[in-house]
Length: 219
Image (cartoon, rainbow, N blue to C red; front, side, top):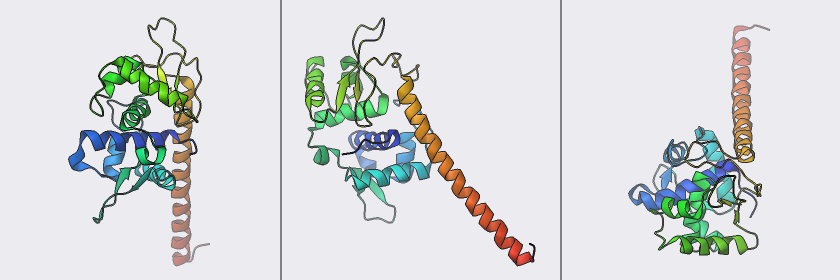
């Protein structure tokens, strides 16, 4: 499986989260997915993705069979298929989802933040599944070097590619300063998507002006 883009990881994490936390409204429509991606709480980094950007991410995940259309109603809705594609147990999927949604975290933070997706008996149970994910080929998570002043090392997912092992400044709480490489990657993806959107709007405006000029007989 190729590396995911940051937004694809966010979309996949949202689908996994909402399936467990709000099953009555799952599968999710595009509008619900956008709202889940742009949440201001329980998300790091906080983003402002457009409908078009999220739809592009959904299409990319569908090409990998990680997402599929899950509704026969007139409004298309989407379901995640991560466990079947990656052949991972639900405990591992829950940990990856929390890492995709909240960024690097300690084992204790992961146990607390995954409570609604899967209830781990203790921190050693979390670490057992993390060790299994790190030992896989390819590895799905990595233990980061301990940041200066930190009591415990943090873990990060590798679904979007490698991350620096000496990641420092990972957020102690949601919204604090984070790893520059991760932020730069997310910002670059967002800027590229915004550039593509603006280019499309400019092309539409040019076509509209040309059509109006022809109708008015103006060169």
